[in-house]
Image (cartoon, rainbow, N blue to C red; front, side, top):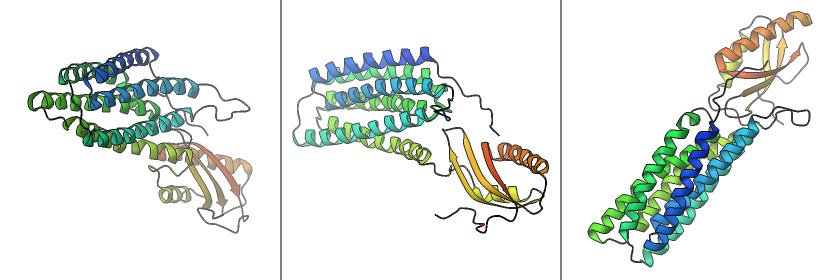
Length: 299
């Protein structure tokens, strides 16, 4: 039984506008970072460049996920978005490590910084990034792939604010070390923010049991249905960030007809979808067959 889920479609127009805005931010900050000598501005530019890549990858992955299943791809491209989310979050963590290394180098070898460019281009980045966040906000609620891209944009707003604050401090007090310090704080935050997405996307690709699902509660609910003796050899996984799949062996306490078993399965599938949001189930019906009745079969 397959559940029917109506996924929020990503707006191609909004995503395209967001990509253009982030290209403008990236180019202006690269030029400004080189002219001013600001690492925090260059680090923000690198982050914005990763946003451009993230948004392009998110858009392509979303289009792939909508493609129909075929005989040689029975699940279609449903996990394209999960792979994109993992890639984007991993890239963000990699960039963060690079920024920490560069910030440490700047601590030991401080360079003069023209704070006017830092403040001006940081402010431009805030305005354009807020616009980008608002454009993709609705798409990010129920889609891990777009959420990864949205995370890039949201952290950009915060990093740009930090860059501007650093620029103001450098302008007012001529404290050069504020620039690498802010760059390092930005990087540490990005690592923290990205780790959850990396962990969640890996869990889906490894077919771990969804964290929102309680297997013991599912077993209890199944065994309350008349004529079902027990349920064993359960496997649960998520196909993408919406669809939960379940397969298991069902032991009946009577040698019932195939029609009677089918009626019970219909009842069971409806209950699992309504109570546990399980969208697809595959059951193997048995009567005095398996000797191993363990809920999870050990290999």
